[in-house]
Amino acid sequence: MKIISSKYTYIDGEYKKNVAVAFDKKIEKIATLDELKAEFPNAQLITYPNNSVLYPGFINPHVHLEFSANRATLKYGDFMSWLYSVIENREELVSKLNKDLIKEKADEMLKSGVTTFGAISSYGAELEVCAKLEQRVIFFNEVIGSNPAAIDALFNDFKNRVAESIELKSDTLIPAIAIHSPYSVHPFLIREVLNIAKSQNLITTAHFLESQAEREWLENSSGDFLEFFKNFSNTTTAVTTIEEFLNAFKNIPTLFTHAVQVKENEIETINKNGHSVIHCPRSNRLLGCGRAPIEHIDRVLLGTDGLSSNYSLNILEEMRAALTIHFQADLNKLATRLIESVTTTASNALNLKIGKIKPKYWADFAIFTLPDDLKYEDKGSLALHTILNCESADSVYIGGRELRVKN
Image 1 (spheres, helix red, strand yellow):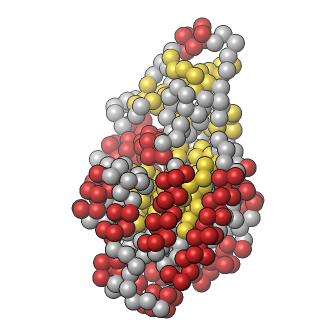
Image 2 (cartoon, helix red, strand yellow):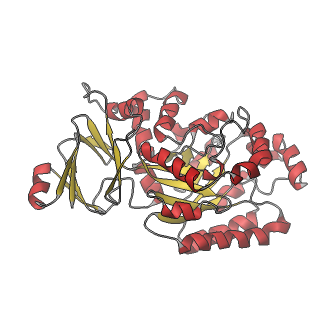
Image 3 (cartoon, rainbow, N blue to C red):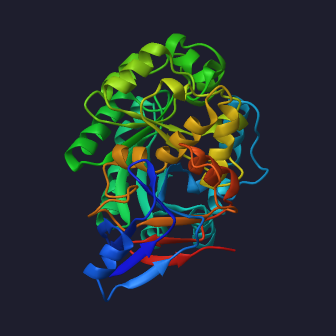
């Protein structure tokens, strides 16, 4: 048993003083330090400086590790230009993926306090490495394909990849399902994949309305995607509509990624059906997609996306970008929501025993030290100063085991 104590502890969305946490692999009890020392006299005592903050380990629910070799290969500034560059350079980038690169990028996330991340996998090449990482990995097996003639082959490949991930399931490897997008997956394939999600109780995610081109294609089979699908699929008609796609997920709470181009009625559907939105502000900016209307969405998570559309996997940098992009929002309230997005909100959306400092939850922590002891402890200031002033965690704990990450 260990007891950890810091000046501030983030519990239930609040920064509490004069509390400590007793834990082994999971959290045992939260009380005052004196109470815990009396109850667990043989516990190892771990204390942090006066201006320290103990958070649950952060959650980054959306990362594409497959393209981690990208630096200046892909084209930014416009979604369609980027997409064509991905198709042109995909094989080269994927061929450069190896164990060391995956571990390097996982460590980058770890340094920013991320103890759990969601890996979107199109081919399954990262599975064995992810299964051996120290972090918890929600391994999203992704399905893609809108050509009816290829559906059987694509579905069989998908089922095999899901089965492989289920074989490696553990406390740190959580099999899950990703549907690429409404424009790239045939409705029949969506239906069959969601049947697996329901029968196996697997977390589900999907890209949704990332770009204006996607919206025009799904609404009218027009716009920039028309030429794209003519060239690559010999089709001039979208396989589904926005409404049909959302209806497919009616009874499956889903993590929709991006949702930049959603309209009021679609936001109402997302909110009403218990779905969440993974917000990736830097990716949206770099691909010229716009600003997601997160102020109208009930459940917002924050993700970095992959290095195919970002320059780092540091979740703190993602929060700083969000503070700037959503300039219309109250600064402290937005900072508070961003911290919630990688802890409490993510925990609730994923329905896993992570993201909260709570008895029986995994002892996954991230400890940060502010450069100054705060003079003004008004609501939201701790969240804001964590985001603004912390470049990395001092250390993290996963399953009660400490991993020092400070450079």
